[in-house]
Image (cartoon, rainbow, N blue to C red; front, top):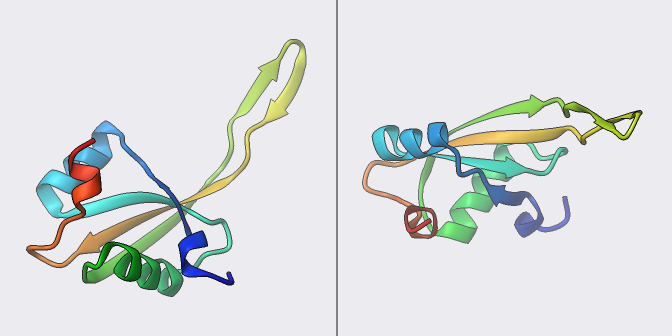
Length: 96
């Protein structure tokens, strides 16, 4: 990773992610496949100006889909669940 802004791909807006954000002050993000916990923490703190207390990362396998009669596979991706310090929040995600 050359730049920290390339680490975070996009926020994941799902029902489970919204519940985590509201109840436990956690944000779910799709991150670069080669990113590690330290890079994700630095990127979130630098971009969103919040304090991160914990980062959990998991790899998600791409689904196998059929295109006409040819099997294909979606790309693998990485998900990060970032726990923010009490009182901090990301305003961009709350308005979605």
